[in-house]
Amino acid sequence: MIEESWSPPEVLVTVDLVIFTLREQELSVLLVERGVAPYRGARALPGGFLNHAGEDILDAAHRELREEADLDVARLHLEQLGTYGAPGRDPRGRVISVAYLAIAPELPDPVAGTDAADAGWESVQDVLFGRTKLAFDHLRIVTDGIERARSKLEHSALATAFCRETFTIAELQQVYEAVWGVQLDPRNFYRKVQKVPGFIEPAGQERRATKGRPARLFKAGPTTVLHPPLVRPESIDSEGAR
Amino acid sequence: MIEESWSPPEVLVTVDLVIFTLREQELSVLLVERGVAPYRGARALPGGFLNHAGEDILDAAHRELREEADLDVARLHLEQLGTYGAPGRDPRGRVISVAYLAIAPELPDPVAGTDAADAGWESVQDVLFGRTKLAFDHLRIVTDGIERARSKLEHSALATAFCRETFTIAELQQVYEAVWGVQLDPRNFYRKVQKVPGFIEPAGQERRATKGRPARLFKAGPTTVLHPPLVRPESIDSEGAR
DNA sequence: TTATCTTAATGTCATTCTGACAGAAAGGGG
DNA sequence: CCCCTTTCTGTCAGAATGACATTAAGATAA
Image 1 (tube, chains in turn yellow, orange, purple, brown):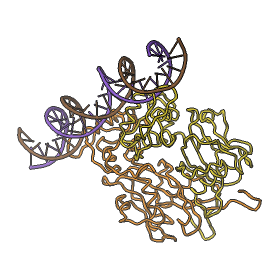
Image 2 (spheres, chains in turn yellow, brown, cyan, red):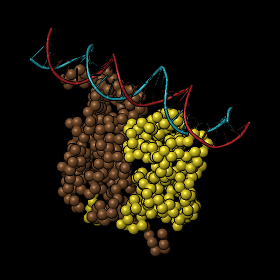
Image 3 (cartoon, each protein chain N blue to C red):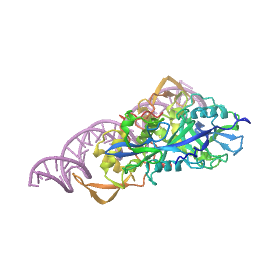
Image 4 (tube, each protein chain N blue to C red):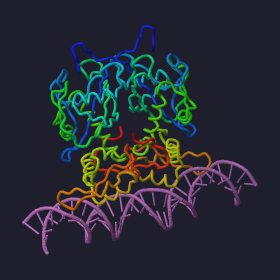
């Protein structure tokens, strides 16, 4: 198919970021208000073009996070979610976007950066149910991100990434409940989580109290793959395996 | 960061295909021998550049499969595996590659296409252990593909995609054993697989015999998400959750 | 000081699931 | 008809699961 006259087409590459956190026990996603065309004024995932042809994609993702939301979370672990490149998804021409997923404990409110008129956390429910409209195909990206997060909660220690350095088992449970959208039995959850070797380990005898009995504190253990997995109840719609 | 003079850099986009199948109970991957520079003569995953700026990425993947390996498997389901875009991975310039994964039952030997001097199935073991060297970062892509396939076998009905229209439970077990690289107890496997609702359903009373007792034939059921999942034994190295 | 409230942690129990193994069923080949 | 191979059905103890009760440890109010 390659002929003498033919040369491969050039396209533009962007990165998009799906950053999830928990606020008031509600799953939230980081959104910006676009300050430039197209979709100026609309809500969108933070992201943008590669800076120069030699920039690594993951580096670009970290840079955009810093630029657009002023979240300089160097330690934030970005995981590639997928690449979205349908022709016509961007009026500026042929643009394909590499999406990254990250999970964060509750963070300081982000500040609007250069390209973004505003930046802030938005309820994931509002996005999924269409109460918050997103630019481009970003709704689809968020949807994929949710499903990825839900799935990873089962098999990996991702849930601890939502928590601070130390956390109680009840807090960990709230992560699962918020992301899966279900209610779990605290006693069975307590038992199961403790049984997975290396998932969580006690962090000092220290404790923190608000009203009831003080809870023990834990920290993330060395294990990254959960054995056995914490299977989510069948009820919630998983959108299939595609 | 966007200034008047600045315009986003243009990059070249390729697709790469990781096609797995089972041959003689061994997991195999489709490779081509590159007919053009760079890496001319080396083994590589089938793939290539987008044809024109308006071509959909998934369409390009199907086209390359047809062109390079003459496998016109329209029905083959391609699942996006990841995007690989490290600067310098391709001497021709800034190239990022979108990799797709597919699973196929045993297929006719592929025929070399236009860009490929040769095309054929290669043992995955030979690739993983470095006995078969690959061009670019294709070893990494294959490695990621294996891990994805191993994981999907647990939670999805992917295994049936390795089999023909109808299959015996023993054949299905061979899929799991080949991909996971473990030995399973036939009796427990039989029990578990049958219990997952909608995974497999009986296909006629027909049977097919070679030596022992004739086996019942099954076909893939409607279920795509396995509940409960078939968890793989802890032994095999899963390379972590990254 | 004591009763009460709230949340954390442990316990119980019947049911189901799991892994390891035994044996019966259904053919083919001598 | 006896062996061999492969498929299918049981069995059985130990572990895991889901549903629920009870005790423990503090804060707060009476």
